[in-house]
Image (cartoon, rainbow, N blue to C red; front, side, top):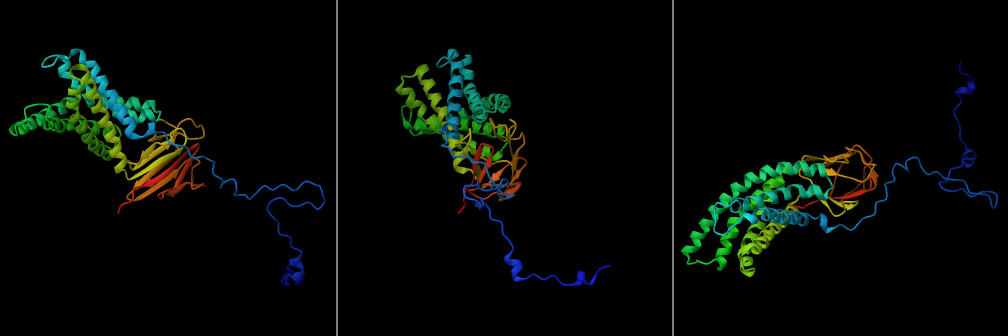
Length: 353
């Protein structure tokens, strides 16, 4: 049973408050001169809230889309030309070089566009899979678009002939060839988007491919005149077509992107990952959309970014920081700094007026 003393109210006097000692964070001065100070272990949440220090690095231009796609176009064009040039004869129709040169050049350009991004991301498995898909697509589209390009070019010749143009030295002839060869850019951009599993990526690739191939086709005849024709002129001309097509694809894709992650630190510093898919995966397995290598702390499936209308949501399965704070689920805002292991990303959005 409760006693009378139990029922009396608790009273706190001013003298009781004066006796209360409030602990102070940090070292406490010792009462004895020369004695070591007491150790401070911080707050309970201090370790959990501390983000890893990742210094921002200078990005490499080698990881820019316009560069590696331009190189892919150059190498693809030269490889196709090199395989077919020994069997090419000016004015002949039945030699294998004459039949296969344009389709072969376009095929290897398509393969280059398909695998170049995976190569710079160090994902050999993804590069092999994309190359295996790009090969048959390139062959089929190579013959189809060569046929279409010849039709357009011949129509252009009829038009400029009616204007009195009869020589390939006339700039009107160059423009007619450029318009016809612009069709090749459609094939390159389409394959680029198909292997990347993105309609929007294909659209940007096709726009850039058309512009680049048109530029390359337009300068083909002036190059032939400057190099006196023959094998060297074809090598230089097709090489420049490849460079122009790939570089234009990369520049257009970068200019029209909506939402992307720019790598500010880590082995891929300077690379931008454009967010095309409704769900983009991040992790240390090569199948990830954003493959992060050389870091044992990163999980095979570490995080994902989901797009839903204008909403961009980060979902973390492993240690992930945004603005220095750990997160599990976070709606990203333009300018947010993400940190995963030794990698840092700046999330960016294109502002619409």
